Image (cartoon, rainbow, N blue to C red; front, side, top):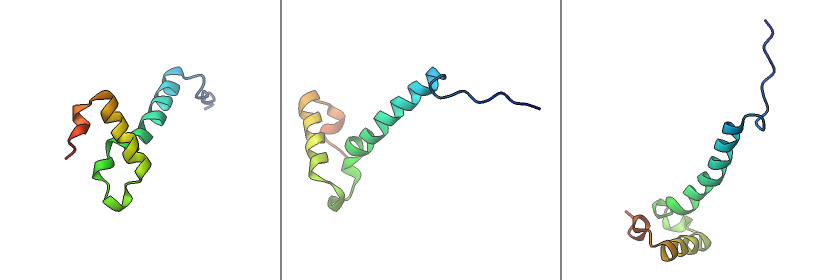
Length: 67
């Protein structure tokens, strides 16, 4: 049986949207959201500054007092 050739990611608009969404959000999760869970020796100063900028700018209460 001959199967049709798979479509390119560009032709699958929804899949492309998911790819872009996760490509943007996954690094942000690891750089900002889970930063308080890292050991102290693993917390780079630029990421701490980025997180503090986010907290100061958007007054996000979920980030102001981490667990």
